[in-house]
Image (cartoon, rainbow, N blue to C red; front, side, top):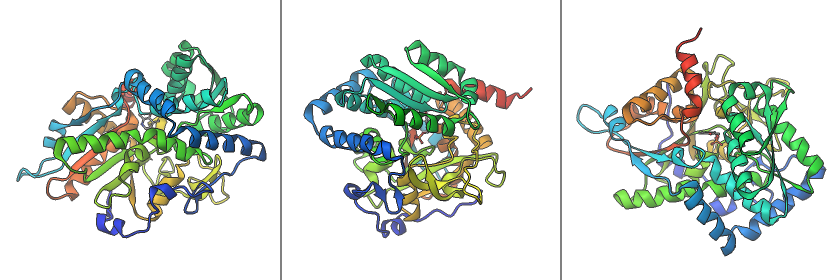
Length: 419
Ligand SMILES: *Cc1c(COP(=O)(O)O)cnc(C)c1O
């Protein structure tokens, strides 16, 4: 794969609006985002937005949120210097990238998703909504939601495609164990897109009593803004940890992109820092020319899905193309609208990594660092291969280690030994 990275100073000369104006009052990031939803949902979105503005700086809300992030989730997550991975990519003259991992895999439930689920459940409680619904693909967001619902004694219903329920049986069991009801979705191909549509349908019907905990920086406004806020802790901690370790900023941020929440969580704190280069990695599946991929930003066209305008995998007639990735968490045909905005303005760069490359990186990180990453995360790790050879000097790279790979070992075993 050949890539022409955008040099950081060129990125800095673009006109990305400051973070306080992203999104604007209409929920737009440039032309992206917005609220393309049935009329019946408009009041619920307004109510959610009002609650968010009421509580985001409320001391009591913040105290409860920060307290649980610390004692329940286990934050702050470490910023770990990956010494052997760094050595692996060192140049013959000893120079080379210094590679750090932001260890979101060490969070309770094993990924970054709990940050958002926790923030939203605290909002739901204050809005007086006793019933929680969510969509899930790989089951990670479903598990995070079931977890916080158990913690607060709320009624929890998770929509999940039948195909995904088969692929991720262990996560279905975990959700049920914590008292959630998992509703199988037969429609379409029985994957995340169909589960999301079904969750939106439920919300339309039960909006009075129900809060919908959306799992990524996608969907209608205010979700991309709210989920970003609850994930921003990743970048805030990273800034402090970089400061403590070397007294400066990171040079490059690297994260995988499904809907885009772990990437935005890391990037947001640094978007206004022109020297920090930001790279998002999508799922290239069996290759960008194979039709079997989930590279929405690289290969999609602008359209509307699940309430927002963004890049989207669609055919000539505007029908959503079924995405493919070996990693269920990246297997989504849309992407958060802010990523579309950052891409169009050249502030962030987006590339793709194939199933095979991700599998190689999965094993590489396991063997070099004793850290088994999620297959989603392995996509970001894999991009070190093309990236490091392009770099000169000793730039400091922070990779968002978005999740742990225990959930993926069976998938990997099958991929390595098909039969
Ligand atoms: C869900 C998931 C992702 C993809 O979702 P984003 O919203 O793009 O972050 C990435 N990594 C892990 C470990 C996940 O569970």
